[in-house]
Length: 258
Image (cartoon, rainbow, N blue to C red; front, side, top):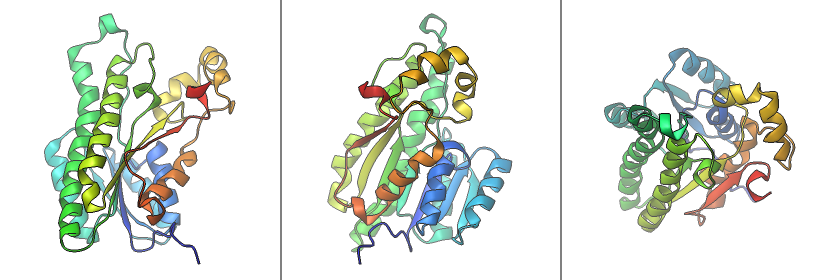
């Protein structure tokens, strides 16, 4: 029987896993059999997400972690490994926007966006890699690192200098990690979402002009939804992707190719 998508016995950690795309992926991972650790900066949302995930009968832990804080990431990863015994897949999903016209873009905002979207991914993957490499040296190679980038890192978008730059950096970072860690059986891939209906895009969702001019250009003719990322999350966390690394998966309803 072909069962590579079965995640029973695997543990996945999802940053920003208490809502939006992160929670959509976490739900799919739990349904596929994985135990979950979710990080978020809002205790109430962490608790609510934990209750949703617990419905699937798997072990679930949540922790308040700001990925823009190196110490919190280091401590959070140590705590996750100690609690769960292992981490097999890490999805670095936490991110913020930061739209601003270039002439008005402050250095403070530029650095704030990069601290979460770029530094946060770096610290999260660095700490996870230590655990995965040590495990490989003990004879158990494997592991999956997944970064949520954006189509903003692949194409130009007005008012998105800080955001686009941070996501472009993530795309390059993942390719470098994929090459470096392949010898340990560790894969590294990125996902580039298009226009997805989350809290981050709420203002655009409520804008009729935006929906007409931008979403009207999406070949699928709709906003993406968090659950649209469940399948790719399960694939990348599973043994089905054990020879797939260094790739970028564009999930945007066809927008970027139209």
